[in-house]
Length: 407
Image (cartoon, rainbow, N blue to C red; front, side, top):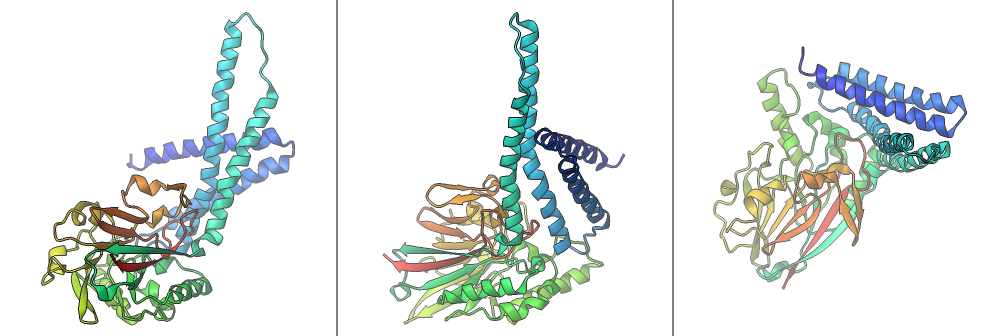
């Protein structure tokens, strides 16, 4: 028996249970047969489309927008139904316990059918919240660009760089894009920040260099007063799709690297550049991808050759796990690290000053925003684009502006 058969059976049984409880919820609150069976018909259409996608999926094509939209629609329908299942299954347990107690008790009590209706109404009402949120996230949330600004103070910052501004963007994932006007709006918003320096921390494509072809004339409009620099991310190596032969993968990787020059970025491959201002300088370091459980091509010692320990350093490293496992405790002292990669999982809840949560936090200690340890900082950009899920729910696409201050 193939290894995938048993997990498929388990998944199928779970989905059937989900649909039974969802159908029961609609049946309980409405006597209209059209309402009951329309929801079932929509679910069937979703699963048929999913089956069609699975049967026709090929790793040689990578994650196409159709693949991502199919995944997004499935999540949009399944997650709300989990809420329905939780409420109605819990109510079933209560009902059977209630009957058992009544059977062995001398006091006769009746279970109220109205309770089932109330629970069904409550479950459907609560389920509508994530359903609406996912619909919004797919249609508009992925373009809900947010500019997040930080002012960071360093004692060892050269005085000439006091007030120096950096725009940090990450994770473009051009192979996911479908709306050129919305992407142009995001690029214009980046340029409106008028920063001194622009830094991009990897994942310019999903897999293939040609994903960027129709977007070159958009991203070559990015501007910064004193230069634009970039690094690679894990998706830029073409590791997540099948290639006809090894040479095709090698050629694609070179073409991905060439994209950076086409849009005016200086790509740093385990290299550094000195940025000079009024006779003073800071070191900008860019490493290839290094991630816990991912490609670990990055060579930090190579990138920092000929840099002095006392130099003020800005490190670009795509995966924040690099900072956690290698960088933050390094005596060489990397004052500021810029990363991306996590996307904040593109879904979660963020209310400034109150709550910041995403399932991403269970995989990455530093998963979104600014973190500080030992006087060293890392900013994990939530990403400009999107991948896998074709939307964003609560974790919006990000443009970070960092001001360096002498203190």
